[in-house]
Length: 317
Image 1 (cartoon, helix red, strand yellow):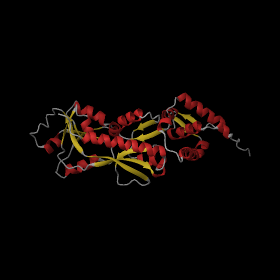
Image 2: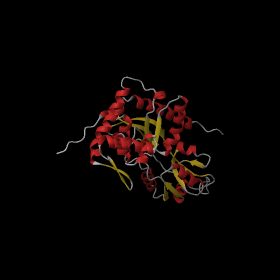
Image 3: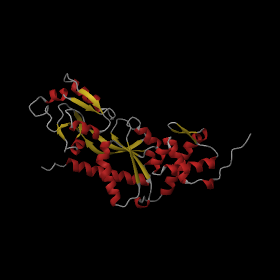
Image 4: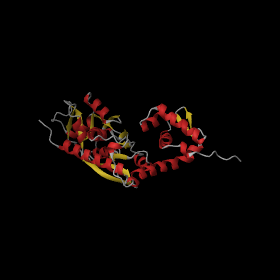
């Protein structure tokens, strides 16, 4: 029985291990490159070195990306754990210096969170000469918490759920809901019955959101013996705002977000009761003492609190 070739550890470097981990998570050279902020040729070159070092293809091309070989699958957990331990070792006992780090932080959040947090966060990092990189991605709420636990994302911005086992959290801001329509909408001039108009005109809903606001709203309307006229479901508030501003469709938006679209939309009170919610920042308990993530969490909290306070201030006449 032949023995496996002996691996020369001197042939390995952290960049190769990060490439392996990214390919294992993304199963695509292009997506792995985006994850690492590298070019596709750079990732392909690193993969070629990995193949020579381990004497195995590791990832085989498929019509939809790459598929790990049995050897790669057997290595995956060990490489991910090694990268995590190396990161902790390098930062152990040291404060995090964002001006001297090229670390990539992965954050999952909705377009609402990005509008409220991302632009001021990047401005703040630029002003302080931070050299870290931020990879922002859609939240995929149904799998978000599991992705945080697996380490696929470092932080998640999401409405507060009833269960979050294994995660820590911090409240970013509290929010309530309002009705939005285009300016000059003929059904909301102030003379009609608000509930009648609310149920008469077609709605834009957001089927992806968690918790499911739509079902709660439908229940609230049903208690009055009515129902909403749902005609469109969309994944993005920006897209919905564009549709609403150019049609007679209406929707229910978080109040601060509605304010951001004040040049195109009018904001009205809801004719039925709908509980507000708290938007939170989530992270895995195992990363609580990570200096880099501790620094980034504080930066996000400060930005969110400032943005929330600004959006709550009275609008200028």
